[in-house]
Length: 116
Image (cartoon, rainbow, N blue to C red; front, top):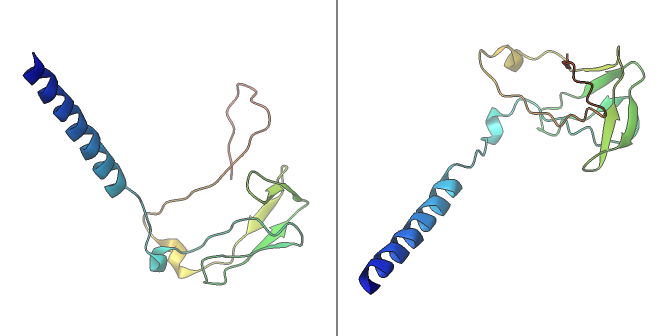
């Protein structure tokens, strides 16, 4: 009985250690040269959003988007007709890409929402 408990204990510890190693190997860290733009929307004032990627593709706020406090730092609050225009760059014509955004929809209505 003691032998079975030891085997089960070691098996559990082995599986736990293996899962920690595999989890750490699966981090997605992009190569800096592959990032084509990063806009944090953290300026808090003005009519421009800065490109943090180092490629200087700053965006122009169009409409009456309002600077507000965000989850982390500042944020922009959009209403219909407001947007941020980013200048065209050949990098944007890639066939595949990943887009990430932190979006807060203040009230769920049970209907579909879209961002465009």
